[in-house]
Length: 172
Image (cartoon, rainbow, N blue to C red):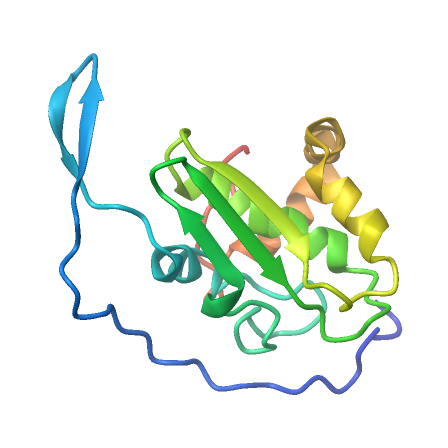
């Protein structure tokens, strides 16, 4: 890249996270493989999955740039729904769709298939908010984007994590 979209982003420290002390209510599992219990997935678990995604433009994680935070995540474990809002560092960020696509792919790869994942920009955080949200919410557009080897390579680079380790060779 010749010119950075945001040449001087504000970088935040990695936050310490901690589970609440309330007891975890295990969910009954009823499947063809047998019955049992599983711990529900919560916003902290989702945040742990996405916090170390690399920003496509800077050598920082989405957490360090305050693009994602635990309080912007909603989880309905019973209904199998996860909603993540993210905030680009600038309102005209051309990387917003790539960031959203990286969030979606990371959660597709990390969560059980029973979950429906919604990724959206935080309200008022982007000059093309409606267009970006429409792209991120359209399954056909997302699938077509991930068929593009160059775009998939960029997503995998974002998902490699701060140390370069990750799911670089895994298909969506």
